[in-house]
Image 1: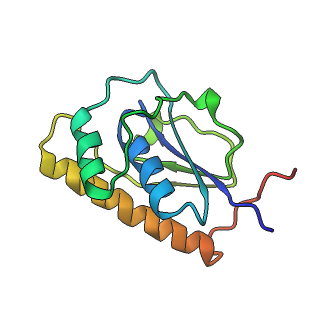
Image 2: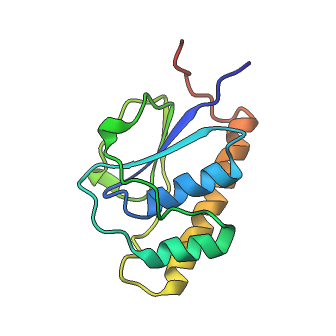
Length: 142
């Protein structure tokens, strides 16, 4: 049986975009890959509005998820950066891409909802590309 690739969603602080991506990936793409999230800097506080909107959107609960540093991640096959650009630390992997999502911190609920929908759309696209073999990471050998 073929191993599922490990996908890390990285954001500067792992405060909401990467955590939303991990939650949505677990909800919509767990058949295609294992999802993780982490931040390259010390996490800031989490905006509870995002957690409630995500819970309302798809019943994904991220209120109990931990803010993780990069050092706690296993070896990754795929790394997705959320839009932190040059400030996001590179970690070894066989495939990477940047989703270029704007930081919605301090903006209204509409911007958070747009971000959640953009992440969901990207997750479904990533899932499809992995399942169709368009992304072929080099899997860790056991």
